[in-house]
Length: 290
Image (cartoon, rainbow, N blue to C red; front, side, top):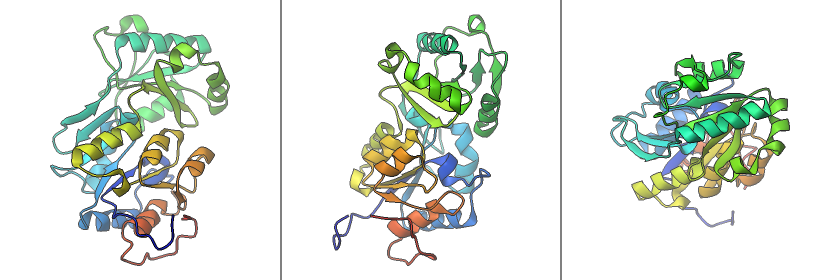
């Protein structure tokens, strides 16, 4: 950042959830809550931006009082953008049943677990249900069902599809993904054990851009904070991008700035530094480099 040149005031902050907003126990810390409340009191929009479905964001939206008529959230890695109070869909990129069949076959041939989210329920065709699928159901607050492919309703559509397995198994599978998959869909990791498949037009960045344009906010007035590969597009879009101290290397290399980890109130420090900049932060931000 050029010294002496003041950046436009930030009007919207897009914040990833797991590994970013939430601490390692999946909780909101008092300092993070206070920083967000202070930013909102100044009229800054806070947009939770997650791979989780809306149901997995709801308790935290409520805890942060982000539940007004003009509040929004970005769910399912940008596959869905909704108005919080009404559930009105602003952006949606559904996947068809044919997409489901194709991706399930690829996962089966590669020997990895598979799951599909339709917005209300998580489905898996694997009898030996992955522990990560069970955990995802719990954290996302969506019911989990085992269904063989033959038992699935062919009229269904989905928000995202996922290959789910041990990190070393997924890492070994990624180089073997068929071009028919990677050319048809966006495919990336949202966690060490999640390989997500979604519409190539979706993603946190494209959906954040659509929301900002909907609200009349320029990208220079947007800040994004994240830690994983699925945060890259929104970090690339935002005028101010911040990587968590616990972020994967490619995120740290992409973001313009770096804050502390999610166990050290990294989100609060970033908001205090870049949004509440007319008020001195309560602690130095040694990791936030420009």
